[in-house]
Image 1 (tube, rainbow over the protein chains, first blue to last red):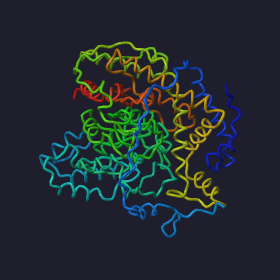
Image 2: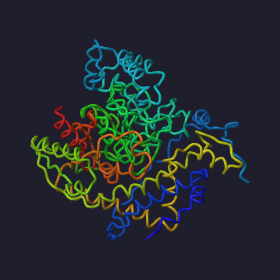
Image 3: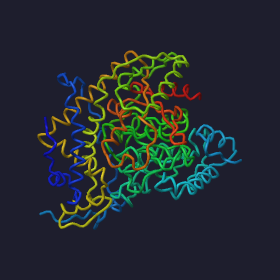
Image 4: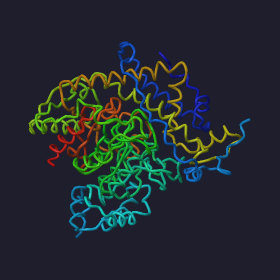
Length: 95
Length: 477
């Protein structure tokens, strides 16, 4: 049984890449506790071990052929990006 | 002739357009003026496309030999379905001002069929909710009582159709988002078989559950749209051919269906007594139409909502990782690249997406995965097995669509778990990938106002034909 009191909003928010204002922590903690207590009901379901799934996997992906001409979508896509320069998306230095 | 938008269906409009009683432009103008009049109060549309009349002119000038069933028909799209060059927000601040760079497959198919795309309708942010109160742009009001919610998440689409602001609409359904608001607004709503309609160009929520479907005034109209938008699509590898489900692509008789009713499940569920009475009357009606009613057991449906609120946040937290302020949407300047992500997402996502992303992150973390995600996946298989067993002895399953009529705006907004329970009768279909149809089954009275409720019918995979047949009989179409 997993207990719900160990949620660390600060850690979760960082993992999820969301800046959550400290003022919202209490409410969020309460909501998440309630939600996890609710969804924890699945742990009482009787689940028999049915062994490995019998479905035969098949490749559903389309063949990677007939590429479109390079660059035909570039302008349209870059137009939606917040910051661009010379055909690239601009991000802050990471190294 | 005067166009009666309140009672206009695709079937009727098509006949009038072909007969020349009115033109596509006149029809479009009628809808635009209705939207202008009623939308400020209802907030069903987040935006009306600026080229509706040009679209109408274009289809009028088309040399369409065989004018298809959607030719000139004005249709609204839920604002998580992309139309090239048009704004698409998913009712989130994080996408405000974003313009789609391509057409969704369903958009393309509607355009090819000559339909007019009217505009984009309101929804709960990223389709997360059951009332449209989670929209960043304000809730949609129920046309039957504007102090009440339209349901959700496709509440803008159902309100638009119910109020005569669109001849039909598309919604998306991940846990009931087409069916519950349809029940609340008195429209017909189809959640098709998982994989029968392409999601290419649908802003993803829960990819193992999402499906696009029609919202209409009649079952025949839902069938018409479904036949246009369905089909295998190389852009969505989860789409299937009808031949992949040979067992249910059948020619059953139109009477003598065996209709299963999960009475034990209904008895154990908190259900408005008036809704239960209405449901029992609907079942009697099916009986009087010649169908056989059978009691069935679906013992694992009680876990359907809890399992969903593990699986969905897990999938949504992954799907929504793409909104990072780099490629599109809202950008907020941080100290470094990580700071950009944190601030852009912190400012862009509203409370419900935030909750679900955090829950998803939690249930997928090392140490919790087996207890939550693993269990929920196993429960999902139990639910699918329950249905497979039931469909060995019945052709269709009947349930109410929602546990009550439309609730008051604000009534459930403070308690996420209460809102989650809105999905109780609808989410099992998404777990199992089954098609389900809701049809208006009457009204219940609430403080002097008649509020619509819905009857829901489930069929086996690709068994939409059964739903259409039974739904038409039920509504007397």
